[in-house]
Length: 401
View: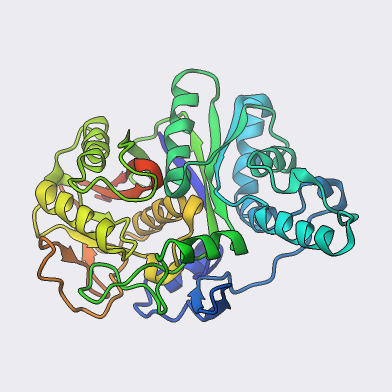
C-alpha cells in the first residue's frame, strides 16, 4: 500500500525538510524547553520550536493547541489530498487519527477559570477537548467525507492508525486514508507521569546503564495512504504491520515481552519478510528501566546483536499518542533519502554507557547508512503502550537500480 506523502512537526522542526535536516545532523540540540511541575521539579520537554496560529473562526469549536498543531501538518499534505479527492471523490477518503491529550490543555485552563470565577470561559467548548476532536476537525478542514475517527491507546495510538487505515482500504470502505497522530503538552500529562515517577531530570538516555526515565514532548505526523500499489523504486510502501495486547498491567510492560514479540512477528509475516531482511529498527526506547530491558531482550532474540537500532525519543521527547506516527514518519524520511545505493538511519543519542544487564543490541552511530537487502529496504518501528498495547510497522521501498 503506497504512502504518497507525509506531514510532520515536532521538536526537530516544522515540515519534512526541516525535520529531515535535524534528524540526521547527528547532534541533540532540539530539547531546550523546561517546565516546572506541581512537585516542584523542573524537567525538560520536547516543545515545538515555532508558534501555533489560531484556527480560522469557522473552526472555533475545535480551537485547541492540539488542533492548531494539527492544522500546520494538514497544510503540508493538503495538495496530495486534493489530488486524491479529484481522483476518488471526497467521500472515498477517510481519516484516522491518534491522540492521548487532544484538547486537554484547554480543559485545564477552562476549569481553572471556572474555579476562580464560577463561570466557564466565553470561548470554551467541550468539543475542544474531546478525543474525537482532531479527526472531526481534520475532516472538515480537508473537506473529506469518508469515515473519520480517533484512536486513543496511549503510546501506540499513532502507529495503530496505520493498521486501521489499511483495513479501511482493504475492506473497500475507502480508496485512500489520511492517518497519523498528534499530541501536545499539558499539565495533567506532565504531572501524571511525574506522579508515576517516570520522568527524568535530564534528557532521556535510552538503553544506558544511567537511564532514569523519559522526558515528554509534543508533535504530530500524518500519512496519505492510497490503495494503488506502484512498483516504481521511489514509491514508499506500508509493507506490514502487527499488533497485540498483553493486558498484563496498566502501566508496566509484560517482562518477557511476549506480546511485543508477537506484534513484531505479525508485521514480518504480513510483509513476507524474515528478520534478517530488516535494515533498521526504530526502538520504542523510553529510557525506563523495565521497558528498555524488555525491548532489548526481544530485539536480541529476534534479530541478534548486529541489527542497527536507535531510539529517537532523546531527540523529540516521548510524544505519547503521536510517537508511533512520528517515528514511522522518520522511517519514511530515511527511505526518501537514497543516495549511492544506501539510505541514512537515525542515530542513537545517549551517553554510550552500556548496561551490562541488558542483552546486546547494535545502537546506530552518527552518519550511519544501510544498504538494500535483496534489492529492497525494509525499516521497522516499535510502539509499546500502557495497558500492553503493542504495535510494530514496517515501511519499505525497492532500491534504485
